[in-house]
Image (cartoon, rainbow over all chains, first blue to last red; front, top):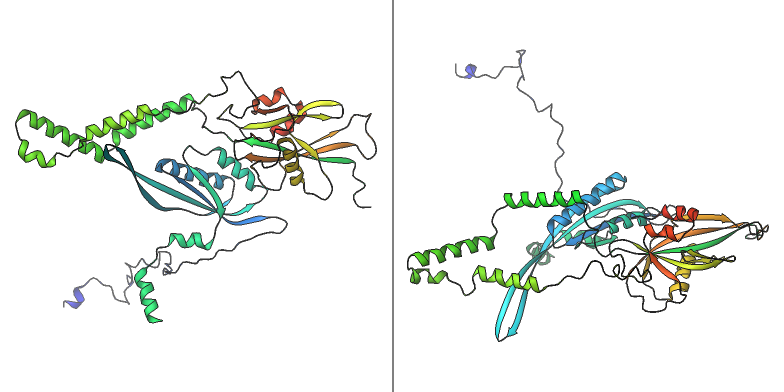
Length: 174
Length: 243
């Protein structure tokens, strides 16, 4: 019959379940959508440790910034400082218009893109922090601005995009 | 009593650094590597918008010269052509003059000015009287009980350079320590020797037009320190100086 002609081996056969492989793969945890916002911050105490510290590098030149961010990341790895994340902020495009008024009005355009990379660090001891700062400062390439600050919720929120429709609907509901 | 039994006198010294303003020149291998990478990238890259525009306009010009297509192609003819833009930019670039890299190094090694070696760290050295000797040292001042060592160092800086120095001290921990014993003549039970704690600070602004109180100060790079300091002092100081 057609039913017995298929290749599935029945449970009594020794070849039952021969094609199965999913039990061999590692278990997948279903992905949660929500991001956890607050990370803990340690302050004060005899061994003074900074909490989350953001090192932000900004520049017009993409390659420089990327390479410098990679360098900082690798430096922290070598000095066994824990790096939590290293991400990029969205690039900002600026149009520069020159209005020269010598007789005829000319407009020269220039389009500048500003790139920003952030490396997040935790567990920086305060005896070591100035040394790290000095190393990074002395190895700064030209044209790259450096900013080191504590991580705040506002920093985290600036990475997320706001959804105006969702907010409108929420406001309508409540 | 609590604080009486210390035979060592404590000093706080400030190492004021001026950060380099320009990057150091590349080594020979670095330059060759950079040139090679640039050439590679140039050969592998695609045309940018500006270059495509330029090529198209060149083709249009050529076609117009060979045969007379004026009317149909006239709509593509903009007021400014890409070639003109390029020439304008070239002229602007030629008009731009970069500041010289070697400023006062020409000026016969004037070591008291801050404009010297723009690509390396400069440190402040001051001539101080210790015992009966006049020595070149990092500015130091004696510690007074009840104040932190860092504020001692800041006071040292303030006494030699006046207030309102925009210097940023990094952290409360000292960078190095140098201890020495007084020569036998001056040594008493209470005063065996002195310990000097070094702190580091970065100079924020390069404007020191106010208050240079005591004369005899120098701004010196790391290599030139050996000319002025004692050897042991130099050893201890060199340990915490990056280059």
